[in-house]
Amino acid sequence: MQNPSGPTGPVPTVFEAIVRKRCLRATYNRTDITLAPHIIYTRHDDLFVDGVVLERDGKPPRELKLGTFKLAGLNGVGLTERDFDANPLFAANDPKYAEAALMAVEA
Image 1: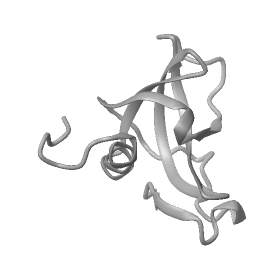
Image 2 (image 1 turned 60 degrees about the horizontal axis):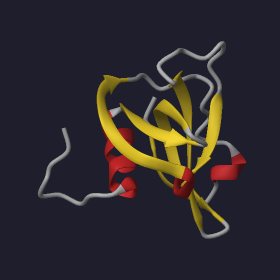
Image 3 (image 1 turned 90 degrees about the horizontal axis):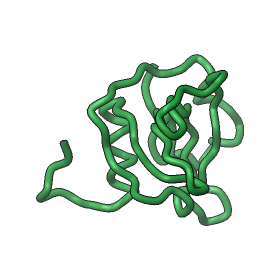
């Protein structure tokens, strides 16, 4: 559970989720998702989160894959009690994260 006296909003919530390896719930393109966020980074002065969607509208996806989400497009971002492990699909050394990563999960 988030500390009510700490910072609030989507950015600190994503940071907390990455550090604690906790899933996020959010709405993306009118779909409720449960997301295992692996990294938050900047691109063209916008914030992005790469992560694995574990549920879409309460159902698991056909296959797990690493997706990219513009943070501004994630609505109602909240921390869940569901833990996750770093997924092997995530490569922290990917060149797209060079000098842009703000925080990433540790393997």
